[in-house]
Image (tube, rainbow, N blue to C red; front, side, top):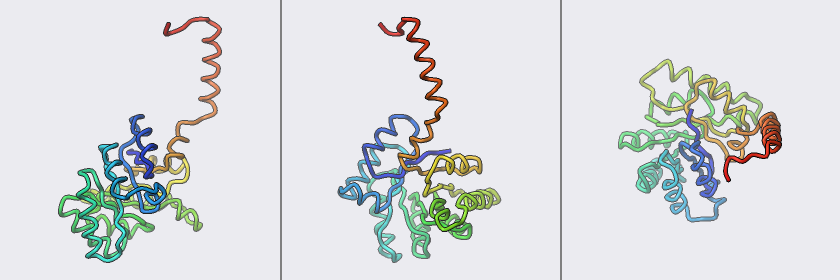
Length: 219
C-alpha cells in the first residue's frame, strides 16, 4: 500500500519524506488556504519534496475553465496529479487530461457507481471519502471494499483506489486488508500508526537494563 500525506504544510511533508514512508501528497483548496501562502508556490515546493504524485485541485466547476486550470496545474511540475470533482464536467476534464498523459485524481467519491465512471474516464486515482460517510451514519469502509472488488473484476480498469477522509489508524488497516492501493493520511494520523503502549513499555525496560550494564555503544 502507498502512503500519501494529506496536507499543504511543507514542513510536515519534508519531515515525513525523510522517514521514507511517503509516496505522494494530496492537497485541496482548504488545506492550501490554511498555509496562507501563494497557491502555485506551495504546489511547486511540495512537488520538489517528493517524487510521487502531488494532487493539486482545480477551482472551477464548468468544463472549459476546469480543463484550462488542469492544464496550468499539470504544467507546474511533472509529478502533479490534477484533482477534479466527481461531476460530469470533472469526468469530461479527467478524460481529456488523461488522454494527454496527465494523471488525474477524481475526488469526492461517495458511491461505487461514481467510481465506475471515474475509471471509465481514465482516472489515475479515485478518492472515496470514508470519514464523511461515517459522519452520516454509513460505513465508509464498505464503499472501499465494493470499489476494490469491482475494479478487480475488470483488469482493464487501472484506476487506483485512494482512500481519503481518513480519521484514524483503523481506517488504514481496514483499507490495507481490503486491498486498497493508496491511503491519503493526515500527518497526525500517520504518526499515530507508530504508537503502541507495549512498544513504549518494552523500550523503557530495555533501556533500564542497558543502563545497569554501565556499557556504551559509542564512546
